[in-house]
Length: 99
Image (tube, helix red, strand yellow):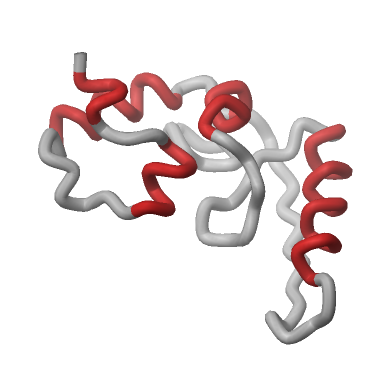
């Protein structure tokens, strides 16, 4: 269990399952999408450093402290200097939470 807002083990005991394959593996995205579907049935949370297909809305449901994290993010990086298209895809843009 851990107290980091965006940790897959935030607030609960957690078992980590790592699945790897080479990017040249045919249909690897289809495989990982199916794997993610199974993990979500068990209330799995994504590792943000690994391939996943979750939207901001799904991540908000999976990470109970996302809005608290977003408020800290907006305060610490109000001009989104430390953001990227990937970060905005999974966490939403900074401005969405700055108000």
